[in-house]
Image (cartoon, rainbow, N blue to C red; front, side):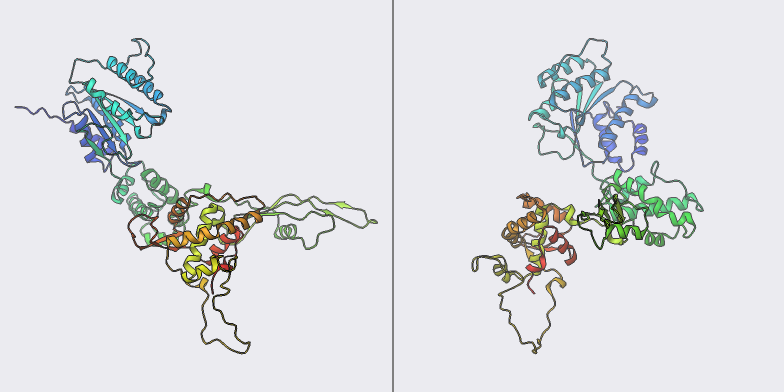
Length: 538
């Protein structure tokens, strides 16, 4: 007896060549969709972004519909329509787009106009009318791509769409989701197909094939270029996969941006393609600077065409004549913009001369001036919490009540005043030399202590920042949890364990450590009008 289970292996083999590292998913999807294999009524395809869910599903349905000239009678056994939820702004838009896509797939344009479809009941009526077919061997596949992100979706959308296959026997409904919840369709026996994220070996295998492979380098063979590209892709993955390229398109863009800079010594003839270690050392700066991958996040620096002496004389004016306007200077990143409109007063006998100085831009020569300033990037709440974390890491807990409490004197004591310090005579020498706390490494602190310091000082610090900026209020919000999560994601706060070290990040007993030094925290404090040194106990 011949087996009724038939799977077009030749079609799937051609699809596997186009989508490497997805053999198991392609064969499982083909088995659940092909009419002569094991077709199902509903199917959930889930996985993170950029894992090939939508592309593989669309390509597989196209191959199964066309048959690619196999001659086994598979032509016409399957038809499909894909509806993308990202293109639908309302639920009614989704329903009408679904009806229109099914009508286009069945070529029903000449059978009368498609009626309005505003509800799930109307959608069921329209699909039942269009998909009436007595041949049970032919199936129609309806794909809802990104249905979990549908805007203005009713709560019964997914269960209602899943029950369409009970009314229409020849219908198979596919739901492409990112992270499905438990029993999303409220019916039993719904198969799930998971597309896992690509591993490092998968990334290297995919990038080693067209269209990602680069052209051969000068003075090298094609094989040497391919070997260098494979090792280069592995190095880019290790350096940037978790920070800047968490998906296949992101990793491909990162490799395309860094490859010309990485292979510049090979093109110049100073290094050979086989000297991967020397090339990696020469290009290590590109793997550490995100401005190469995203030039838009770097502050623009405008070069000046004027000489150094002209720039210095126009920026720094030693004497200003009476009645002249001072030079307001604004510093942003590495560029210093100076705008002045001065009037030089001459003696009455020699007349008066009016001089108009236009805007000049002076580019700093400090190599570290192009780095991003935390004071400009962080919101006020995150800056205040970062200062509180620094004080919690560098001040002993026994000094908190004296420094931050107003119970004894009605005001806070800064700089460690009143903490048992003894004044020695001028001629007496101390027996022990103590190193300043700001020069020592940070110590761990409990999260509850940092939040308490923030709550005790934020009114004073925010008021000083308001008076410095000239604003009536800083607008410090109370979302402390979001600010702590931001600092932790930027590695400005580091979790070091404690009670519940593997649990919730907002656990009060969890221990943290500040991840910035004295120079950085001093700049952040001065941006808020706070001298952090006054709050440290020596």
